Length: 309
Image (tube, rainbow, N blue to C red; front, side, top):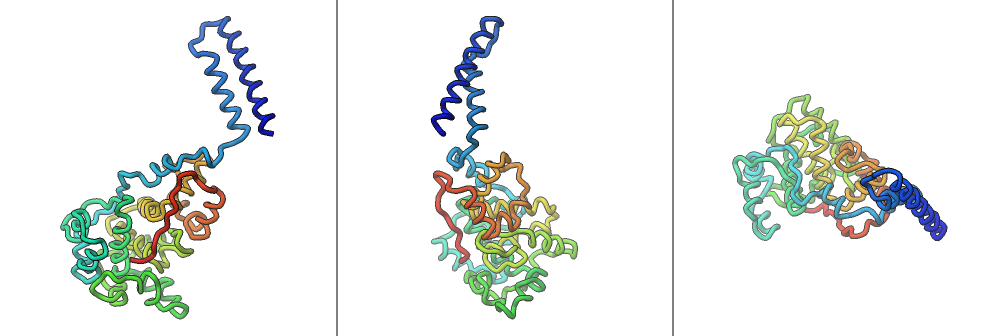
C-alpha cells in the first residue's frame, strides 16, 4: 500500500510540474511551478495519510501548555504567606528543612507584605502546591464543612485523607487547622461560585473534583479558587488559573491532552479551560483514556506528581 501511495504522489507531482511549465510559457508568473507542485503534493499526501502522533512536536506543545516563562494567574498573594505562618498553618523551619533552605522568592511568598500576582512555573509548582494546600486546608469553607469530605465521613474519616493526614508542614495538626480561619471573607455568592467551579475541576491523580479535595492538589486548587473569588475573579478566570496549576502539576498529562486537541485541529490557546478540566479529560480515568488515544509522543518525559508534602 505504501508503494502504491508513493507512486500516486509521484504521478501527481509530475503532472503538476508539466501543467506548471505549460502555464509558465503562456503567462508571466512569479511563483515557480515546482513550488506549486510540491505544496499541492504535500497537501494531497496529508489528506491521504492524515497526521500521525510522531509528527507532533512535544517541545512545541510544551511551549504552549507549560511555557518556561510561567503563567500569571491573576491572583494577588499579598501577605497571605505571613498569615499562614502566623496561624500555624505553615512552619517556616519545616519548609526550610523540606526545601534545603528557602530562596529569595520562596521567602518572599511566605514572609512578604505585598506579593504580587501568583506565577506558576515548572520550577515552583511544587512549592506553590504546598503553600496553597495550607491555604485550602485552613480557610473556612463550605466545601470543607458541608461537602463530601464530611458527608462521606462514615466511609472515610476526614482525618484519614491524603490532604489532611498528609499535611505535616505546619506547627499545628491538620485537623486543628481544618476550615478554621477566615483568611479571606467570602460572600454567600462568592462561596456558591467557589462550590460551582470546584465541582467542575478534576485532577489526574484521582477521580474526584476539587469539591472533594481529598489530596494535596485538590486542596491547593480550592485555596486558589477561594483567593480568586475574594478578589472578584470571574468564573472563566478561575478555570483558566486552575488549568494553569494543573498543567504545571501534571505536565505530561496536559501535553497529551494538547496533542489530542492538536490531532482534532484545535490549538491549545483556543481550548475551553472548563472543558479540559472536566472529568472526561482531567480525572484519572479521563486522562488515561486520552493518553491511550494519543499514544506515545516522542521526547515526552515520564513524570508524575506526588500527593505528599
